[in-house]
Length: 362
Ligand code: FES
Ligand code: FES
Image (tube, rainbow, N blue to C red; front, side, top):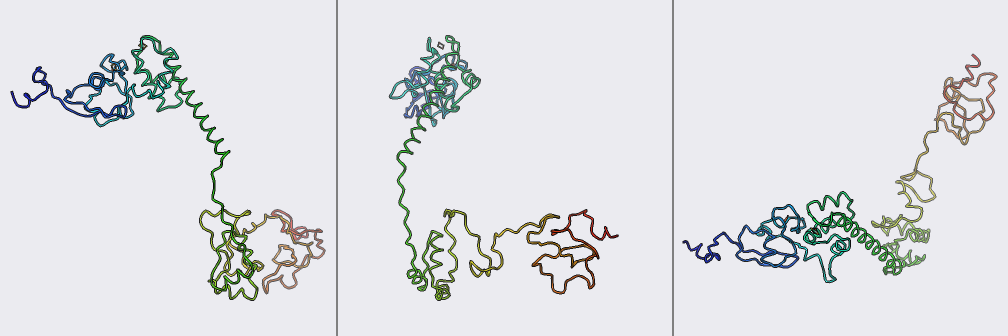
């Protein structure tokens, strides 16, 4: 006999099957297992070596579900899992369901609904319901049936177990809603303390002029203060202050996250815009009026004066204030047809299809 066999823990009994040692982590507790046959099932090790007899031994071939446990969060039949392969896994058994307060809500619901008679299937059933409600907080009847179809019960007929699933789902949902409502109420009653926002000092004529002339720019977060400060620069000092203050003319771009003032930000002024009162190139963002459709009366138009035709054959009326390009005008001697009586108030480009005066005189 070799040394290996002589040293085998089963040498004296003649059981020389290969063994191994490992540690299982069961319900959060490290449980060492020494010199165990490598073929032992997790169900066997839990029950016979570790004394955790909650998982039941029904068929030992994966048919009844009485041995249901979780390995790394997956519901498995403990009788089909080699224990040595679960050495690095988190194992949860029915013993871990109950806490200091006693049985879990799942266990209580199973008992209260009448799903426990002989009780042999109950630990596996409890683990199956627990696993289902971990994955699906509001399972349908079909989903609950699918989840429990691997757990055979010869006593109760399953209706009671399905009722227990519904009971726990309802109770957990109600508890969550109550918790959220309480949290909202608490938040409304005692608003979180917020640091008081610093109140910026309002500029004065002297203070702003002093700062600007010293080459410093006060940083007002409030656009209203910038406007106020702008008004406070003495007219005779504006040029000098602007130059010394690094070309100050407009408030700097506000930092990210600055709330827009009521009415929104003003658009960036166009290049060359002299000031708020200047009439220049429209600022960026200024919308243009769309070209009016044919037939739209000109807003400023007076009655057609009937004296000038700008183009050949088309009676464009003259509008007050309209500036023809230099040198542009009606052909010499070209005027309104004799006797043409312009309609009173006619002031728009005629729409397509309108008969022209020439047509009437043709
Ligand atoms: Fe594991 Fe029956 S004992 S499925
Ligand atoms: Fe007896 Fe389920 S209660 S087998």
